[in-house]
Amino acid sequence: MSAHVLERDSMEQDVESPVTIHPPKLPKQAREDLPKHLSKECTKRKIQRYVRKDGKCNVHHGNVRETYRYLTDIFTTLVDLKWRFNLLIFVMVYTVTWLFFGFIWWLIAYIRGDMEHIGDMKWTPCVSNLNGFVSAFLFSIETETTIGYGYRVITDKCPEGIILLLVQSVLGSIVNAFMVGCMFVKISQPKKRAETLVFSTNAVISMRDGKLCLMFRVGDLRNSHIVEASIRAKLIKSKQTKEGEFIPLNQTDINVGYYTGDDRLFLVSPLIISHEINQQSPFWEISKAQLPKEELEIVVILEGMVEATGMTCQARSSYVTSEILWGYRFTPVLTLEDGFYEVDYNNFHETYETNTPSYSAKELAEMASRAELPLTWSVSSQLDQHAEMDNEEEAKNPEEQTERNGDVANLENESKV
Picture 1 (cartoon, one colour):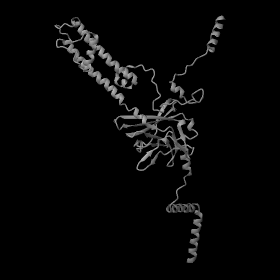
Picture 2 (picture 1 turned 90 degrees about the horizontal axis):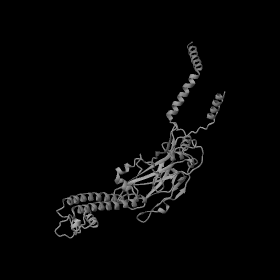
Picture 3 (picture 1 turned 30 degrees about the vertical axis):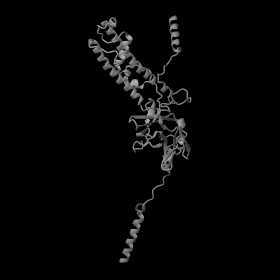
Picture 4 (picture 1 turned 180 degrees about the vertical axis):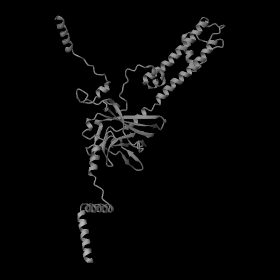
């Protein structure tokens, strides 16, 4: 009896024990961007930018275990470092190299006994006038930098010193080529050129040539132009597939004239880049009322070659939903002066309101299709329709036709009689 009671108590404890279910661990961005029907709390939050307004990507790489990959491409790693670390490494490499070879020169002199015969005119040292580590360090600097003051010189009675001289000269040339090349590439990087490529603060949506368009403006502040300039745009928006897979920060192309060649720019004066909202556009079903509810980001990328250096330059910016103005246009900035055109950059970011329907492009297309009138018929089509109507009437009244035919026959017989 007691055994049954213990079994029943243990079963009750098992039933009443809480069961903890651990949800699958998702990345931080995926947890933040979960759709509203998947999240427990439908709270309004600030949209996290994927690309900041200054063009820097707001992505940090964490838990990178294969750090050795950075050392396999040590040149790119040094170029990508910040200036303070780059200068520190530049000074340290040369200092360590001079100290290392200076120690070797001092060691050769010490082993050969040159330190014990300082001032002995009958003794031929490996390096003349080398009397300590400091003088060996100075001789190392003179050898690697090919200064050659002429006070300390190597003699022909020291074969090990001649070999060391050759090794230091070759390695010194390699160090010079590597470090000077690294500094040259870092100095000539066209990143700062992108600072003079500007994007409008806001993007606008309005009608252009009877079609709803998304537009933004780009400009170049320098007189030296960007050669072979091209523009691209990406829509960054999380989505869920039909199979239930959640894709955070999915990237979708936004057509800004790829098929017509309008994406290739002659960027002498500010240009307005237009995206026609059609059936292939991701904004096809988005209306004015729905736009603030969308969690999306438009990333725009301007690429081209710097005219002065020939190096490729890239400038980036982005627009979130709060920076897309529905029913606005950009204020013109180009005016004709006496013999030249002048660009007023004070109005570069300025917009003005214009009459724009608040419906989506899909709704506008449906309303336009319903409002279309039928085409006018041609004369031949009307005659064909009248003939078809006559044939239908004859088919409906066959008895009347037979009666008319019989009456005509009787009249003919009576006339013969």
